[in-house]
Amino acid sequence: MPGAAHQQTACLAELTTAGTVASGHTDPADWAGLTPKDLTVPSGVPGVQIDGYFPDTSTSNTNHGWHHDAQFVVRLPDRWNGGLVVAGTPGNREQYANDRAIADWVLARGYAYAATDKGNTGLAFHRDGARPGDAVAEWNTRLTQLTRAARAVVAQRYHRPPARTLATGMSNGGYLVRWQLENHPELYDGGVDWEGTLWRAEGPNLFTFLPSALRHYPSYAAGGPAAGRARTELHRAGFPAGSEFLWPFHHQVYWDLTQRVYREEFDPAFDGPTEAGTPYCAPGSVPGCDADYDYPARPADVRAAVDRIALTAASAGR
Image (tube, rainbow, N blue to C red):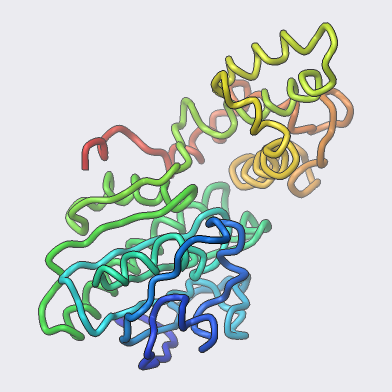
């Protein structure tokens, strides 16, 4: 794997999770909860797996006991269809997070597959880097690095370069797809952005709708005279009519945590020395409450940090 600081190779009778769970070549904790429990598991894909990491200074990824970020996995099936699929992980998960949702299925169709942990993992990913936006900017750099190295490995293994290289991913991984297609179209023949996060410096982005959700959802959930207006505000923030059945779960596990940790990445000064805000605070209840966050009113350097990793419409149709 060109550029790798460490790598280890295994010849496996099964590259899909039908075999890698038992052989220890995946981590089910990485992909827990991302697919239906009864999803069929493809099988019958022997080949080579390469695990390793690129040079990096952060240590949030503990897979293999390495305590080293910029970890990757590459899988090379014996029966190759000429294609390569590369992926970054959803959320803040590690390199095996796509194994059930993506890797199993592309490997069963003969594609080579490669994935990266994006260079930092976990809910404290924002600690990586020297300035706001550095951690997310590294995600993009790491997928570009992986793609170039994986293309070289494929050419070495099969004695010809991939006929097509596709980027795919969900959530934060979907964001990476769009960024790659916009910034490195020479590397890819296409991509699949699966519910990717949208980052635009002037909006929309997470900070233009999550604070509104945090402000208004409690009134909606409480019912009473204020519930109707709260629902209207949630619709105005971008949550479509008909999505109300999802709101309780998203309020419980997604909106608050996501707003706080990503705001810490791009605007750490908002809450002063507090790291990633105060959980589930009501508007006006504490200084630096993320329910009070007003992205358009924040200093220009916050938008500049977002602009460093922002998307455009340049990937449309690819």
